[in-house]
Length: 596
Image 1 (spheres, rainbow, N blue to C red):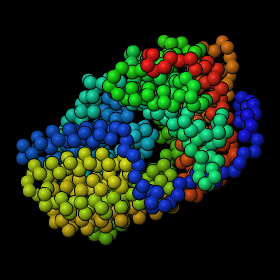
Image 2: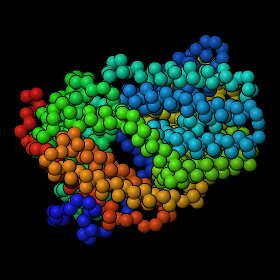
Image 3: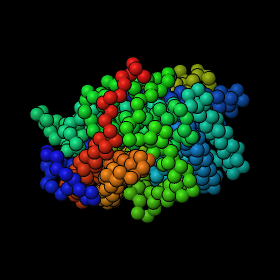
């Protein structure tokens, strides 16, 4: 496409090529395909083993292993927040522990007052919906609401007396406090570890974008032009991945607390990654992909953070982030964050249809299993709750993954059960092993992690005493199949008409952010901090636009998406990012890595 000038405000309405919506296919092979492991898979895996091991062994020594289900509720909190800087992680994990205890308290009190299966299922479905909305609104990240729902639903069907509840909650809070310490302990060794990993990912994504940028100046956007083999050109996808990684790195640095020399260098590295992806061009200075990869490797390692040359036109000591951090930490900034959270939870929230799906899907799954005489309908509730993702297509993929993984998992449970019954210590060791394996494998694909989660969940029942193996396996298979079927059926019946509206709002926000970035970029009197903040806002709006577009494209029953406007907004946004990066000055004369 030719490079025509783009005026501030709304993007050009010039006719663009029509591409089909980026709806993910329903191929089982695609849903079950393995991905490379996460670069931090071992962190939650080790954390949950340490956080669970000490409480389990303590209860084993006291001869009260039957209470391990309550301590485990607190220990599982160690799974959360591993992508957050430690200052933010401390607050987030405190909220997770309190939220876990609150859900458990509601379940225990309900179980102590009634034994009605119908009431218990209704409360379990309502808790699952609330937990889903809160986890999505707060963006706590993996493993999301599923752990909360697992704990609260299981507690609903455990015999309970009111006088026992304070002790059980104290055990959960104590284990949660220990999990909090475990998750924050690495800060004593490597204070900026999360920030370094986030910046390394941004550099690596920028290197991929520079090596294969696709059409220049953002001309092509999702789903991208087809190449000679009718495959989607990876260039636009690489550009979007780089934008998302840079945005995540800035968010991590903004949440990291007071500036340190290491964080200063990390900020400068993100500036270089941002300039590289905004106007990719291999082989020149900081835009050399090998140079970016070398920076990423050194940033991820334990040695000193590389110190790149400053981007011309930006003050070395600022890069705009201090001013933005000060705004966010001020009283008005905190109020704005609370207002944004309330908007995500309000009546017009795009999360509401998914919450309704969760409520009715979990209720239907629970009642269906209860009607068939299954003794543990909470398994069906958890299965249904685990299906609900951002859109219907992803929920279908998760239904396949959950069913396949659970069915394989019961076979693993049948094989390992004799070993676990050698003694209580063997049971504890088996649970810890499968807890580690679940977190180690789940980043490859959800079904692979479910192969380990299923035997661990079944072995937890053994803490209170042995159960017939055939009954456990039969119930789990029936609950899995019925829960997945009922959950997905509900997802197809409860439509999400708000997904397209979210795209419209994201388009308007992108238009405003692009106009602001062009205005500040063209204003010679604008402060460097203001230009950087406008550029980051535009990047964030493009990330939100792509997320909204992908979510809407995966919904089956809704009005047509504004494909032309979405394509034009992305193209114009990337052109503006390229223009602002070029105005900051060339980076071709940066010294080589060896000269630093």
